[in-house]
Amino acid sequence: MSSIRRQSIISSIIIYIGFALGALNVYFFTKEGYFTESQYGLTTMFVEVAISIQAFACLAMPTYIFKFHPYYEHNLPHDKNDMPAIALVVGIIGFLLVLLAGWVFRDLVIRKYSEHSPDFVRYYFWVFPMGFGLAMFTILEAYGWSIHKPVLTSFLKEVMWRLLVTLLIFLFIRGVITDFEVFIKLYGLTYLIIAIILFGWLSIRGRLPLTLQISKVTRRYLRKIISLCIFVYSGLIVNATSLVFDTLVIASLAGLEQTGVFTLARFLTSIIQVPQRAVVASSVSHLSKAWRVKDMQKIQRIYQRSSINMLLFSLCIFFLIMLNYKDAVVTFGLKEIFLSGFSAFIFLGLTRVVDMGCGISTHVIATSNYWRFELVSNIILLTIMLPLTYLLAKKYGIMGPAIANLISFTIFNIIRISFLWWKFRLQPFSRSSAYAVLIAVACYVACYYSFRDIHGFPGLFLRGSVFLVLFGGAAVLFRLSPDIRPVWNSLLKRAGLKKQGH
Image 1 (cartoon, rainbow, N blue to C red):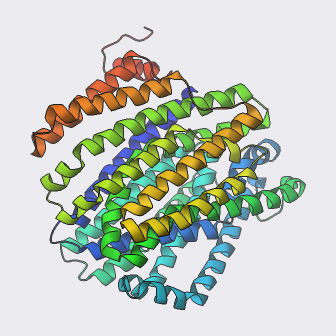
Image 2: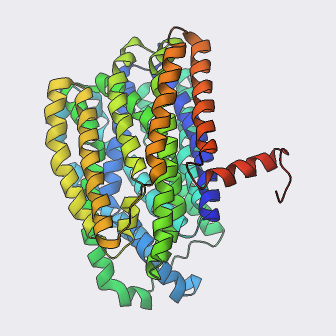
């Protein structure tokens, strides 16, 4: 567990640095005088549609890598490993099919978005380079995780990509990029740039064998690989649709301005998810190997520790943001319209807390022999979410999809946890899970009522720092996670406050 913990911590730090850059970018996007709400909403639409393109184009290649990499690694010399080449070629073919579909259905896009989101129609085809770049990066990222390089992939995706966006914003604000049309076209190339960087790094370091000679492992497991990809691909399409459907519905029904407001709330809740990305990146290869040797104790240990660690992080960040949301919008001079996203943030934030508190059940299932259940559970999620999102969006505006998210993902996680308990007697919770929730709520109430009349930077500082001290201190004192004390002791040693070996 120490290697998972170390890589998770390093990846989390890198991802939080990336989100600090992301927060800076959001600040410039939402501050008076730089970008309009519609322009900010359009950048969001680009990312959301790129995610959909990536899901369709990858044809389940990342899952193929996660599941079968241990078999390729164990049975083939490095230069005979045909997995990376197969995955990349299939991903390119998948993207060409998506591009063809995008051309065929362009008239439908025009009908749905021309009234409320005309800029999306205008720049529609520039989203495809972004989708292609994200698809190629996702495949390379999966391979990077499998060879234990999650820190590198996290840096490129979370830091480098946002640095590129920051550079574009700076050039736009300074007038080097003279109009928004040039900005959005360059924005569409950003994921392609980081995909090329990752490809180059892996190739130069000799970590990316590229052979099209079909290996004995591929021939031996071909039927299983095809079966896995068909089932998982269907599930991934369903899941990706559920993740971006709310934004697409808002853009269609309310326009890019309200999409921008919803995007800010979504961005803040994505900060809550940072540890989830890091834990998954560090754990997935260990899960695959544990399933291969049927080490159920190790799987349960990873599953349960991921749950309590991510629950603690998600509760901490959720309540920190909720304490300071409205005051931060006013203090940092963001446009007043973004205050209306607070209610949506609460429901979206609770969704993230529920999802993270349930651990990495998705990847426990996906790396097991019951990966077909991915499709079943994702279809259930989509069946609930799609109609609920549309109906609630029409009735409650941007708060509707947020409520639909909470309801849908709660049911979705209950189904997955129940399945894992029924099949393997695996479950993510412990007594510490309940204690963590109670302590977090108590700390929030204490900070809210103590500092609710203090505004501006003093209020932000007091509420944030006191909550961190109270919640963090309680987590360490009551040992809510078995990973807290080792991390705490390591920090004390590095700071010279505790001797080595003690």
